[in-house]
Image (tube, rainbow, N blue to C red; front, side, top):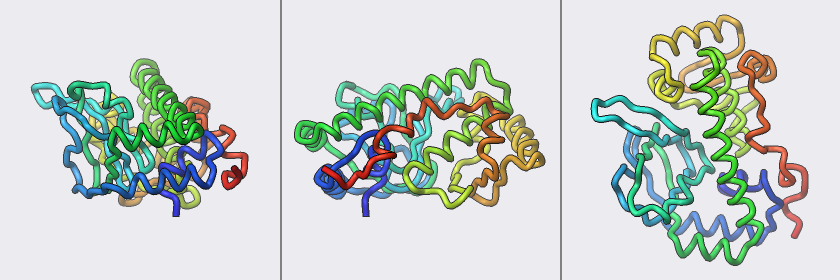
Length: 247
């Protein structure tokens, strides 16, 4: 079975069977498991590999000296945690797990070898990095211009579609292993404000939260309320429309 990175990159380009084998082999070389709320890599560390999220969720964050935290990105299964880390002498932010997670550590030589031998994977990785940048732009707009309801609805739409892209949704539902505090730290809102907006979305029938699972009965309706346009995720690339088993 293909790992979630293969499924994700397959949204951007048409991967051959050999491309898929190479990616599947790479993520089996060094796998580690960590518990919830553990740092994968800390600010000030010197990175020597890229971490791929196989299972579980993680986040990129900055923490101020007084303990305040800003979540800058959520990482889902199939996401590569900072493919540019080889350029950094030391990390200027931290990456932490949100629940129990399984990671594949891909070293510099392995990633370079894959890129050199598989041009379509290289193209897909470029798309992956561009989409990550586009997501950051949307998060900036979220905090700077959208209302609290729009911010939260927009983020939930994004997370659902990202999970759907790697085959981790069931109907209208997906895992959501994050707390209201996590949402507040990502959206620039207080925990109390997030709770109030969640209650409003629930009472409107736009979302349902049961335990750690999110249901969005009508994605288009939530998207309209949230001013959500999925174009920045670029999930309609050729890999979604062509047979990825062809060479």
